[in-house]
Image 1 (cartoon, one colour):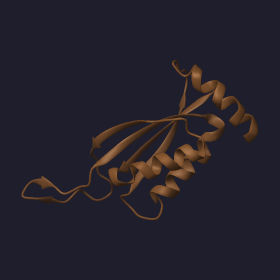
Image 2 (cartoon, rainbow, N blue to C red; image 1 turned 180 degrees about the vertical axis):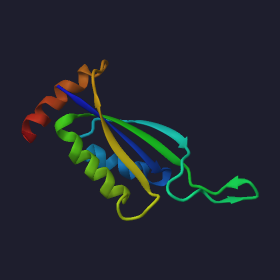
Image 3 (cartoon, rainbow, N blue to C red; image 1 turned 135 degrees about the vertical axis):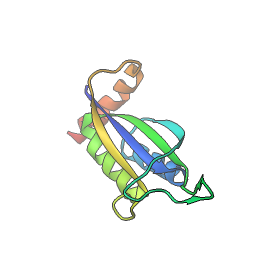
Length: 116
């Protein structure tokens, strides 16, 4: 079984909705890293030297490769990444190897077989 890592940078107000949609699409869990910062095309606004940007979270999903595109598309749809600039981004990377996921493989096997 092969995996992909989906990495999502999203406003913290949308984290729960993104997590729920990813689970419905087949993700078995995620790691959330709070209070990330970043800039897009436009620099962040400041007020007397204080940043006025919204807080962001980083979500890390380790997903089975056959489910990854569907999960990625659901994350983008719920997060409105293509509709509104600055709401967030998501991308996936190939995972060469992973350990500590044997308990998930048995659950994923039937889900992937249904997709194929």
